[in-house]
Length: 254
Image 1: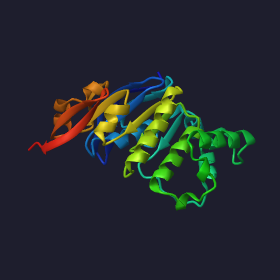
Image 2 (image 1 turned 90 degrees about the vertical axis):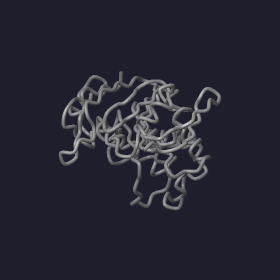
Image 3 (image 1 turned 60 degrees about the vertical axis):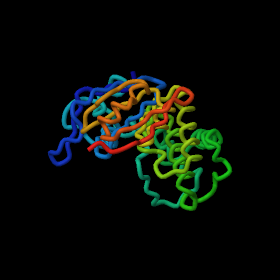
Image 4 (image 1 turned 45 degrees about the vertical axis):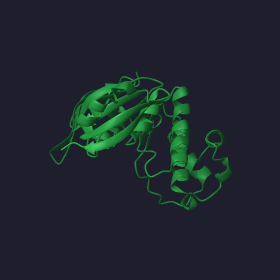
């Protein structure tokens, strides 16, 4: 078990965002957090990454309290790609992916670090743009690069906050195919998403959050019309397609 969360609560300015969260994650799982805006998905990822300190409860990584790790130690285990990654540097794709190796080296990258970055770039099929300025690439290309940087970090747990947000269909599928390959290689990935049809297709587990609480936690079958109605306040129709579900919104529940 790589991650254990027990009785976790978090509040912004005394306003509860997460309440009594209990969660475990094992090796080689793709876990998707879903729920309305403001339900606590992004906040939970930030707590797991120790970017935010929980008010109550504990988070353990490989049976060690997250508070007992140094930043560098934690970076060897957890890779985090936030929802909106600001680009305030002038680097090419190779240099950006190489940044993921900082947890394993000092200021100067070793030849081993460079070799790992190069292998990840080839594996992710972004070698044709390896020396292009990242600021001149599309949103979909940049997102693939930031995920590649996380993969180069060689972390066992990867946290992705809405990795397909504002991307076209092709880039959405490419990114999820990249994620699934990492899961098959034994990585644990926790991702937040809004597209419930994609969630059903690619997830091993789905955790539904409602008002800062875990409403349900289970296989993609937990994505039922009744649960979606309760969590989102929307009536939907579900269509089975090749073992997954297509979610069709019908109307808002007043």
